Amino acid sequence: MRKVVGLILLLVLVGFLVWGVVALIHPFGYPSPSEMDDYIIDNAQAETSNNNVVASVVFDYRGFDTLGEATILFTAVTGVLLLLRTAKRKEDES
Image (cartoon, rainbow, N blue to C red; front, top):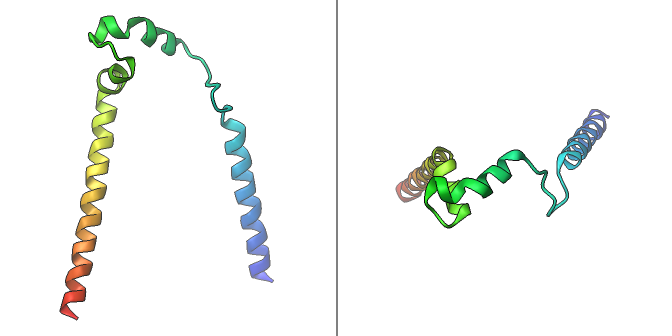
């Protein structure tokens, strides 16, 4: 009986979370406009001396964010490699 009640509560919780996320997501292709969009489109080339607006956003306006993402990715890959290396050593010792 406890498992059934727990499963029902879990399904209700998951359903509520999915409903909340779906309610917050905009339809694909229709992002919410903001003043920042217009500012970047109008001023990206002049401020960054870059003809590619996407590159200017990624590397100039959001440079520290991109650096942080690269650091997180490097750390994750290093951690996985260390775990796999340790697992391989344990197999070799057995």
